[in-house]
Image (cartoon, rainbow, N blue to C red; front, top):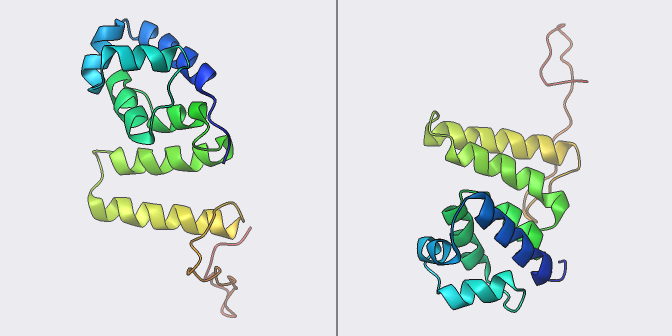
Length: 141
């Protein structure tokens, strides 16, 4: 895991707050943290927890994963997969079962391509083969 880079996190938070046209007090109230605590985070004096970062992201209407990357909690390489999962889980146009199916398909493709960190108890993907009858039983490249 990368070290916590609170200086750039604070600068990034301040920039996002200003872009959202929020005062320090308004953001603190919206995120449920104290005004002095938020000020210390922005100045790089405090290391916020993942939960606080999530509250700040929600108040700023930005991705929590973006703040996790800024804070060094989440590696930049992992961010893309997390954002895809978040997009699927928060899409109001599909139901829960569809979301779970999409996530399973997405994870299987990532494992197949050697990108995903598969859970330790998950089996490797089965090789895909063509059937003898001319039909395709799996996806081939």
